Length: 217
Ligand code: AMP
Image (cartoon, rainbow, N blue to C red):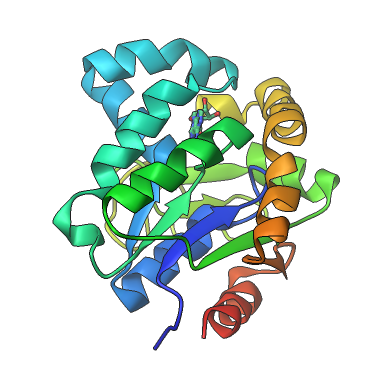
């Protein structure tokens, strides 16, 4: 179905990377690797990694590059990534992008495509502060744009929905600033590598998802 299998989803928080990555993973068999989800899991389980990451995640700052790169390298070398992967939320700095290359080389892979999700700032703030997530299956909903059928309950697995603490207005604004300063330069970096494709992330998932499928064919 797809010609491109080793993917990075790039873009600011709230641009729809996670939502589209979930749909794509469901339909294609590619593994969805969300570094944010991994950190939230580790924090929830109280692991050593979770303890190290907690302060950064809560404040909307970035977890140190070496910690996150090592974690992603280990995840990518698991056998379920053989058919391909969607990196969602990694890399987030030029240094992480530099560390990703040798990690992929070690497993005989290289990136096929970086999909850059674009959306205007005001919409990102609106989406982040109204976002709710399933505590069981991590499906995303939005109180304004895509509410669940039953208040507070996941349509798919009946799990309880919650708001991420770092989606509070102040922290969301901080995360968007961190994105601009640290992550946005990756657009140029991957454009220079010739593997960047930009898509309009401001539309609903029903519109954006087919556009993403199109660029991966
Ligand atoms: P996300 O779910 O992608 O919005 O990530 C939530 C939080 O996890 C971020 O605000 C960071 O604190 C941390 N995080 C996720 N991915 C990375 C990364 N690649 N580098 C550093 N920190 C990250």
